[in-house]
Image (tube, rainbow, N blue to C red; front, side, top):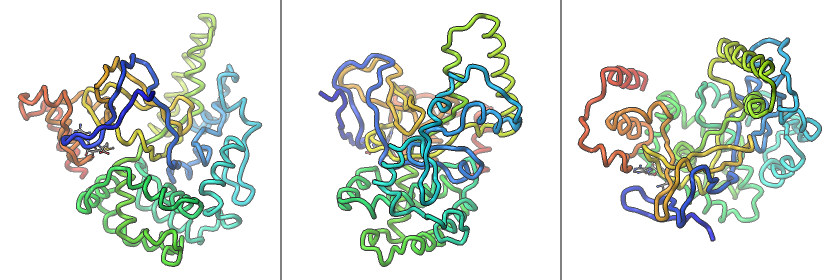
Length: 390
Ligand SMILES: C[S@@+](CC[C@H](N)C(=O)[O-])C[C@H]1O[C@@H](n2cnc3c(N)ncnc32)[C@H](O)[C@@H]1O
């Protein structure tokens, strides 16, 4: 029996609840996305990920060399790099050359969407309408990226190839939707004010690239539906980060080794992270985003009892309990990062309202309802900075 059920409440809409005790550390469920993609700038900067599942394709050593800008870097314990042992399985689309971590991923992509959107010999042709669209998007949305245009391109592919367009439409409708006015706010918050003005132009390029007007399966993709689709991704999209160097570091930490080797490996890791910090800053991962039907029903809490993780270093999401969860309790994750989660009720509510467009009604916010509506001096400064950058 499934230990998770869907329930609706007037305060938060749909949410996931558990039917039996879930001990801390349990993987509550795993989920494949409806669709996932690497961000466009991330790909353009040379971060190598499987086109289908976002698994890293660079060995940890090559990854470290690139991110630290030092081709002389050599990593010990090559057996701790999962990419190394899988290199023989790497493959590509024979038509356009995009890379896959395995023939299974290539087949899944081809069967689900890639056959309909493959650019073939035009993959590097910058004048091809799909490349013009991607380029336009990149000029609107510089790193740090929050959304990938390829998600929309792949959705086109899904609609062209599915045997059940209505079923796919229903799957999209199942994600939470906002009102048209809220959609505009989401664009603004996601991509900046400039984007709001350029959305019409983006839609024109999208419509040309995919002959939206003359493709029966895409006739629902009017300018307004396109905007709603972008807002849907803004509200429901889940970020994914994968890294072969990160995987190597984790695996090395679990290896048995003598003290001398441990000290030298730890020193090397510290040095490499410093070098990477100096060269690429916080951009260490292959990054992208995805839509998950089940995970998108999980509400936010300022004292969450679960977290989303990617234990297979690809787009397969796992929901892990971060404490024991009792029968009847709602599963909640945090939409805020660790740093914002530590802020006062006033600050947390403000960020959630400004960036996620809802008033948080979690248990912690309820308990702290009588806390003063003031932030510390430091938080006041940060709040002002955030408002300035809006
Ligand atoms: C990704 S969806 C989560 C599932 C959603 N409740 C549904 O009905 O599909 C995010 C939306 O859920 C609602 N939500 C999530 N956490 C909430 C909270 N702590 N308090 C109030 N509303 C919340 C907000 O409307 C938010 O925009």
